[in-house]
Amino acid sequence: MKLAGLKSVENAHDESVWAATWIPATETRPALLMTGALDETVKLWKSDELTLERTNTGHCLGVVSVAAHPSGAIAASASLDSFVRVFDVDSNASIATLEAPPSEVWQMQFDPKGTTLAVAGGGSASVQLWDTGKWKLIATLSIPRPEGPKPSDKNSSKKFVLSVAWSPDGKRVACGSMDGTISVFDVARAKFLHHLEGHFMPVRSLVYSPANPRMLFSASDDAHVHMYDAEGKTMVAALSGHASWVLSVDASPDGAAIATGSSDKTVRLWDLSMRAAVQTVSNHADQVWGVTFRPPGGPGPRAGRLASVSDDKSISLYDYS
Image (cartoon, rainbow, N blue to C red; front, side):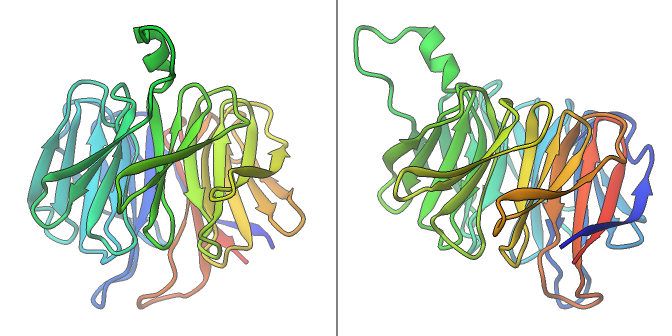
């Protein structure tokens, strides 16, 4: 398996690019790459050419997260302004604006069926679940506070929730916190199940394997990527190689590989059968905030694609084979 560089766009945004995801293809158009940046904009890019399709404004602070509905018709952007903007991909018409208290909107992801949007709740030490039909808050999944005397504010700040991921069967939500713990919830019962331990620094990105609903990958500031059996509560492997914080992780659609982006300015491709990095790509000049594999399906080329975004304001696109 390997990554081959296809195209880079320098100055894709006016400031650091913090977030990226693919909007799945629909019957009428191929997949689009969606990026969010400190410059308060969200941009949609045509696949493979990386030509700019549209720029969305509407946030008044940097965009920290972008998420795409599995239908490809709806997308969402979350900003440091504590608003989540939900919009129609093709027309850019606003569908809903979800408001949260300050610093309680971080990463977000739609569930595999598209009925629920999970939002990492930052300082609330929880994940909020929003119904995508009525755009109402339907559940708050709270990380239990430690037992003992009165919990201090200091303690809850460590549980600051940065990252969130759905299992491929939609039954579980996992979230990653500032203190390195990962919490797993049973969605149907809105119940905390257990922690996954092993990281001691912020967990900024999580993704489940598309091939195995139990397998969860985590990226942490401790420079490691962990593989967990999220149901059995066990760490399967710790992958080392990055020289600094690992800011983003994504799993390839075939489930054979993961890609990571790091503040060491590199993108790494990991072969899961070998549990080792097989390639390091160094074409960004600053930390790599996001890596994202294109989902399969839709019209146009079927080849594997990975995109990466960076503090250097650029986007890079790679062939994955």
